[in-house]
Image (tube, rainbow, N blue to C red; front, top):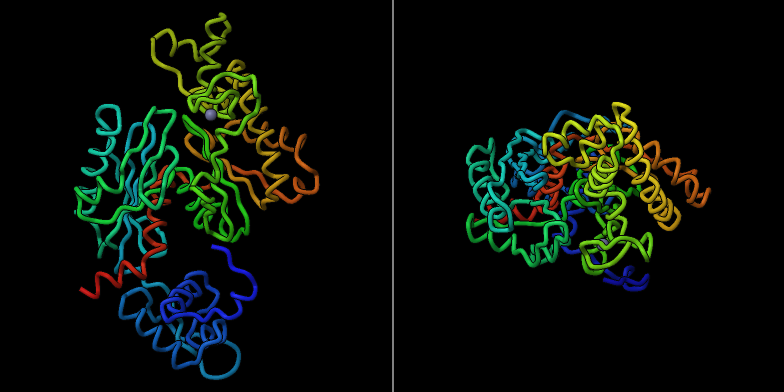
Amino acid sequence: MKKNAETANVHSFSEGEYTTAVLKAIENSVAKSRASLARHLGLSRTTTSTIVSGLINLNLLEEKSLLREGRGRPGILLDLDSSIWRAVGAEYHSGSWAFVETDLRGSILRTGSLKVAGRGPDAFLDCLAQGLAEFRRNVSGELLPAFGIGVPGLVDCDRGLIIRADDLGWRNVLVSEYVEKKLKSKALVINRNRGAGLAEARFGGGRGTHQIVYIGIGTGISAAFIVDGELIHGSSFSAGEIGHITMDKAGPLCACGKRGCLHVYSSGTAMARMAAALLSEGKESGLKNKKNQREPIDGEDVCLAARAGDRLALECLGEAARQLGLAIANIITIYNPDKVIIGGPIGSIDSPLIGYVRKEAERWAMPHAFDAVKIERAALGESVGALGGACLVLDRKLSLASVVRSK
Ligand SMILES: [Zn+2]
């Protein structure tokens, strides 16, 4: 939606928009009392009080202790009410679904997981519905009536559909439709790394940071571009698909059909493939034991071995970082972020990867932009993707709580 300066000036806010703004101001600690809300939003005290009362009645806000702001009568401190509403988020990774229950502040109250028996989208969807049905049975408060779900691949968030997940060979998986039919509840779907980035931006290392890029590395690789805690989706939801930027026009074929994508060099799949090839050449490595036992080596094995100083694994990591660092350098130059956060099952491992990437990015990024950026490892643990799903629900808490209370 394009908005020029002229239309922005004449835009008058509806009551609903003011209610959203009040909730957001409290949530972000921009205002803490009725008086400071009125000042911050340019509203009358009466209108502010009416909106705040409505939000208290919906159990979204609560009154806390007295607050002294400058001189004059102390006001009553307002805060999100974390005692009633609960959000449930889910995320699929490494063949399992992870679940979280949070309060309105996004604090994780409970986690769960369920392994998918079988392969393919049918087993994936069945397990999701089963897991959510079980998980919601034990919710400790009142459930906001929607599930937020992080999934692999390119996602149409409006339709709750995986358009394509090339690693898995899936096309047009109707996630929302399936969950809504099975569980009679709304389902909000997002790419898992974009969800994880959102959680990291709001609750992890990106908190309070203006502009971040989150890069999730697992079997695949993709990113989230986030400004002030809000995700940039792009025109058709593909903003952040860095796994398929071209690093070498003549490079190896990628599952997406193009050649030389970042995915074929720097994903966990690529690291594992490289390690297997070097082992086949007879090179020495601790990874040999796993190969001898005919167990498949994955990207996480390579990272863990590299952390322990395994030379072959370090070589693989160095190769992956060479291309990843170049891609990140270009992102830093064109996007000028405050932070690049590297996460996902592989990026979260405390391995030499980040150090290698930082060095490579410094070589190729515009110095002015590189000097302003911090490159760091994700701060949140395993549940970050499911927490990202819960963020989608929390973003809609006003409308979801209103629906429940109006029944
Ligand atoms: Zn590709």
